[in-house]
Length: 437
Image: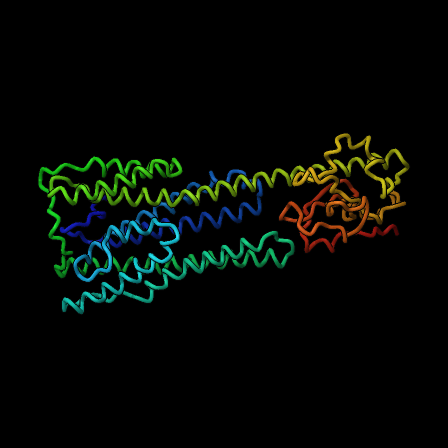
């Protein structure tokens, strides 16, 4: 496979099947796995606890796509050196690893290359395929648009209403759709780039690099190039730690090969090492973000379950009180004191998301003076619910929290003893004023 990495004066043809196929396999494979995991996570929330593990295949496919992309970037710019190229192959690849600056540089890499290539046929008076400058510009703009939509949807926040949750979902799905369109356009552009490189080879338009000598027959393979590739691969599994050294060795090794007058070879290995190491380094913030989000969601999910358990415990305490008091509910204005012997631990009255804030639970005021056996629909009748901090012991819907700890809904306990996470669009389906007829 390394023959596809080689540049240099003796330019090789670009294997379209390899570059386009590997890119599509990595990008589309990552997208498909990500969508499947999202659907499964919504159905089985506990999967969020092991999100970094189940995302590993998707991340490896994304790394494959990125490495192939970086190798082609070097190769396509190496092919037009000395013929009006606006930058060198090394700069084209290296500047892609500079944070934030690469938002600008990507326009030079793709859009700029299509422009420079189309100028070759005019200056050299040779028939070459026309590169699609429009697609070159599109693949630079669409990722920025996708990133903007994803950032905007995340910044909306707490999903406090069904409309807000729908807006977040639409923004995220639009971002993913734009990313899919960009992947298809990138594959088309890569196909055209390979055709362009091969046309240059067929026309005998080798890149002008007289300062570099061809490798000798007895040339040795650069040890730094080999080490760079090994450390780059290890960097994928070490959160980029070894990739830092791999990137430096790849750059130094490539320069040493160029200046060795043919005594050293392995430029392809050095380029591959730079690409893999750079990809591993770019993965650091992504992996940290995924891992941090997974741990955050895991903690939040654990607190959700604890909140649900507290609600069930309080419902059970109320039912025990009713059993010992001829079915009467505890006085709603003083129910925490009345249930003290049944509750045991007062921490149950607090929220796992803010235990220092005091009591969070409020009893349905419309149960005052009622008997539990007179409630005709206990499965739907609200008994207790999470309320705003510093709320009175009893009340109605007006005391619901504006932004609860859980993003999936409001924790509500019912007269029959069960508890649910109720979405905001379903709160109207609950019974707040019980019907005893």
